[in-house]
Length: 154
Image (cartoon, rainbow, N blue to C red):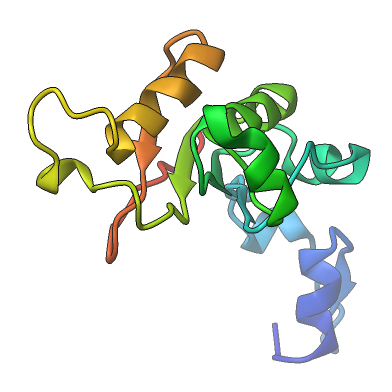
């Protein structure tokens, strides 16, 4: 099949007839499509995102959502256009997201690696707050340069 418009037709499921009269059908030349993965990233979003956001993020393989302040500071978070772990997890639950990653933490919260045992002012507390909403489904705390694998669906 020569490069050009015929490629597009085949990719769209339409058979093509070559100059020599041979008919090529899409199943002759294409593999089964690979199911995509859905990643949604929400930053600086105070309050529950509307129906449009829920629809876009529905059944996301990975939902990355900011959680700047802890649940006790929900009013302050909303006032400054931010979310809390509870708000992020509620949205993830509403969307049926498969995995939630929290990000965009206030500097008042120490990263897990720097927190001392027994301290409750670290990002680990934010993780617990989100997990309590998600019936203890594991929540990931974002870190700089973090790599998260998202397996191909079969």
